[in-house]
Every structure is written in structure tokens, then in C-alpha cells.
Image (cartoon, rainbow, N blue to C red; front, side):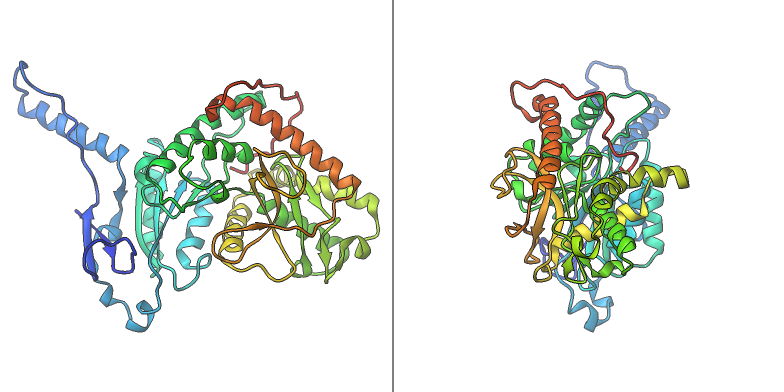
Length: 430
């Protein structure tokens, strides 16, 4: 079976039009038979089948039409001529509810543009392997012209190979009675492995967006285990919180949310997050002038944004998935599209070199701008009043405690887990 690497792929090693490679790498995993009796044909067949099945479960595997040889000259010449080199996007938790919405947005060209071919590498587990095949079948049936490859696997070192973007959605949810420290430990081990895999096989300019909760500290763990990738390339998702904040400000002021700008989420993706109304603008006016009720802003608006996910679960009986997928798409577009003059966006990134007085060595949501090249810069011209400073400090303190809990997963000595009994984890969004 062969898989195509199309002529649009910048990494194609052979002349254009068709470059093929093995779709399924089957390792010679059978032990030496020296000194052992010859296997019966039935046993030999069973052994071969088991070896093949093991290889399938551990190696990247293409699916359906994406395994076929294909000559790109079959595409309309005017269309193919405008396409950029294919980008490779790895997605963990690819059989989950969030990915079920996100993958189709990515494949449609909605995120990177209608001239950007894409290859999707989908990471799951042994338990979700058949579900991954089902996802790939749906992608196949959707006939996205920009979707050049779909590959599935359960080994991050295979799935992350040469990826330009890694969207790390999969994580273990917090179970009943589970302490936050236990959640950090269990999910932290996942991000140790994925960070090491990214370090070994991903493109060195790979952009990493962590969605799996607790996403700030999971990002910190992955970053520490991928020293070959720039710290600036790691993000934890807080765009959903920003979108929720814009919605609530729009509702209160009686305007459509497209007129709400300059909204920042500071800190941790937890209930200690700080939705910033101090710097927000509505119809290009300070939000505090449009909404003069400071009591509402401090004591109703901010808690409403932080607890919106839990409120949704109570109403619908399930956690947010579609809106999370939309926010992931928004977070990517914020990095690959120049920021509108005077505006900014939120993302949790390394605090190293920040101008806000926040301790370095954390992953903290802050206001950023981008030139559209995938990079970002801190926003300098923000107001931090006493209320905002106190709330930022509380979220900073929480993230410092989380970091202390996982220092051993970051290859650092010291640290102790002294998280309080309060539950600040946002429910069910990963």
C-alpha cells in the first residue's frame, strides 16, 4: 500500500507530481527462532497476524482514499497553481468531541486559508483506534480538496514526525474525588511523553497549542521536555475564555460582540483567571465608560466568564466542544493573521521577558499581538489598576503552586505539592 506526498509538499524529496512512501511501517518484531521447534502453519499465520496488528497499533497508518497514488495535475490548474506548500498538523485526542468539530474546520481551509493544503496526523489510543478510522472515513467522505493526507496512530513519535503544528487536545478528565495534584501528576506524564516526542521528531519551528487541562501547567511540562523547540512556540488555550468575555460584555452593553475589542484573559485557565474589563473597549470606547456599573464588572462579569463551562454542562448535560473547537481555530488564526491595529488577543505563553511584573518560568495568559507569521509579541500599553493587579497576583500564585507540584516532571529538583482544597479546575473542556 502506498501513500502520496503531493507536489505541494515542501518536504517532497523526489521530483514533483507523485512521490510515494510506505503508508504502514511494519517492523520485523518476531523473535529469533534459533533452537526452537518450527511453528505449525496455523501458528505461523497467527504470529504474523499478531505482529501486523501490533505494528498497526503502534505505527502511523493512512486511511482510504488518502492511501492512493494521486497526480496533482488532476486538480484544476488555476486552483493548484495558487496553493502553498502543504503543512502538517498533528492533533492528539483526535477521536474526541472537540476534535470532531475542529478537524473539519481545519480541513475546509477556514483556519489557514483556502490556498493552504493540509496533512492531518491524528493521535489516539489503542482503545480509540477504530474511532480514529471512523473520523478519517468522515473526512474522506467530506471531499475537502485541501486535505492532502490523513494518517492515524497511537505513537506520538510517529504522529508528530515533521509536524508544523501540534494541537494537544487529549487529556485525562478529573474524576470524582480526584485531587488537583493527582490530575496534574496523571496528565503531566502524558505531556512529558508528548514533549519529548515533539523534541525528537517535530519540525524545529513547530507551533504547539495545548488544550488538555490543566492546560497552562501541561504546556509548561511539554515545553520543559522539548528544549529543542523555542519556548515562544508553546501556547495554552485561553481564547475560549476571551470569546466568552466578549459575549458577556456585548450582552450587558446591548451591542453585537464584533464591536468588543482589546479583551484580555490574564493568568490560569481556571476559576482564578482574570477577564480584563479595565482595558476592554466597546465601540472603541473604554468598556468601563460604556458599562459604568463597576460592581457588576467585578462581581458578576468576571465570575460568569470563569464558570461559564460549568453552567453549560448543567444546561446541556455535556461539556463544551463546538465552542472550544471554534476558539482553537480563533487562536491559530490570531497567530497567522496580522492583528488589527490597536487590538490584541489572549494566549497563555511563557512569562519570560514579560513587561507586567509576572514571575518568569510560568505559562500565563497575557495580551499579545502578531504580525501574522506565527509569532507574537507582548502588548506594552495596558493599564493595570489595583483590582486587576490583585487578581493577576492570585492567579500567578496558583500557577506557581502548580509548577511546584510538577517540577519532577520538568527535570527540576525541589518543589512540593501544596495546592489548597478548593476546586479551581474548569470542568470538562478537554
